[in-house]
Length: 219
Image (cartoon, rainbow, N blue to C red; front, side, top):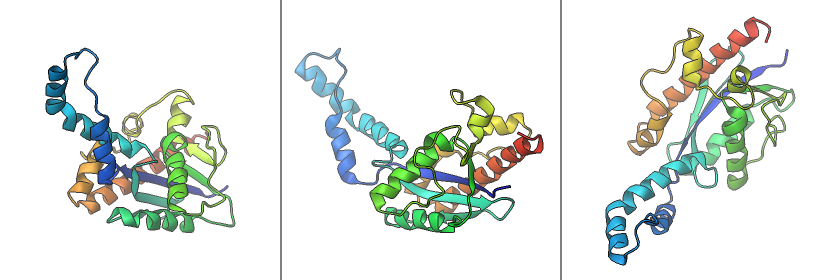
């Protein structure tokens, strides 16, 4: 059996002030506002909130968002974590994870929604940061790719979806402990790096337990 590599990553929004300034400039009043004074009033009241909401969404956009944490484990081994203290450390986080992967033997990457998010995000950030991508990571990941075991796809199919926490609950596996992905950006802003690292490690614990349930019945 090929080794399984369980992993999860956490992302944060763009930390570039120029991106936020551009998002502010791009905010437009709804089309229902016609008069210049009404438009100006709406913008004065809503521009900053709209820009901050748009900025938050860049955590899902590898063009501007950043990987702050990757947690990973091989088979039933200890869960390791590599975390960036600043965005300048992001390149080292990717390089450390890539170097940890076995360059000589094929490994199966396991995670929740990794075919749709984690692997594509990794690949694109590697391109932007100039980090050489290991051969074992598929360049065009598909839900059915043999180099991946995506637990969301395994449960819901290529077109379905289920959160990891919901799937864990359904299988009787301990879920998250009050901290979730929506809190990562604020935790980063607060300098709560250990909290993010612990959360990411716990996600790897969960996905490994879920995956082992599949393996136990010969999935």
